[in-house]
Image (cartoon, rainbow, N blue to C red; front, side, top):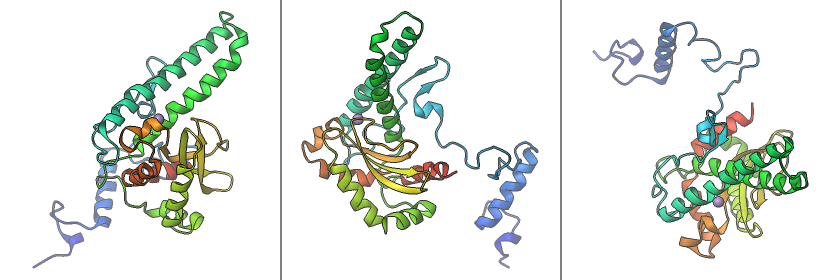
Length: 268
Ligand code: MN3
């Protein structure tokens, strides 16, 4: 006789999500009280975050041991985003351009430290502050850029789900309304920059923004969720001056599950 799933003793067979969850909680309890704290189960306790930060320092490009910024690894092979973004562009973009921002950011930090120590030209504070902002934003933007893309059909492309999908509907009318706005804003960035989807914590709304260079035109405090690099170095080898074709192709490699995790964290 066929038993109901929750009565079955063979857990390796098909089980309902509810049963799986109960099993998981039981297993956590068996591991020990520490693992089964409310925080481990996702509940808020004191000032512990409800959602763990979605990105590690490693992924964000910070070397804790050396106390320096560093180039994070690509989370996939350089050719993984083909045919939408070609391997040669990815290699140059990650290995040379992003590395350049990391180097520029570390250099600015060092020069500013020298000036503080009385061992540099205080007249260059303005110069190094501008370098800090440009290369710092360049580093953060690119670290996020790699992580919020994924191979098409293997995490990349499609549409968001859950809370993010609901908020996109609220704030942009529909996913198509968002996509039209995002692509048009990205296509129209003057010279070099980015198109961004961000969460603005005061209004608690999603916004589409343009970023010029690496850091201009932002609102302080917004949380970047996903951006498309529209500097020519991001697309010129394959698309030449056809930025619109590149932005259309980019929509096929957006890592929506990652964007959803970033959104969940931004809303805390
Ligand atoms: Mn770039």
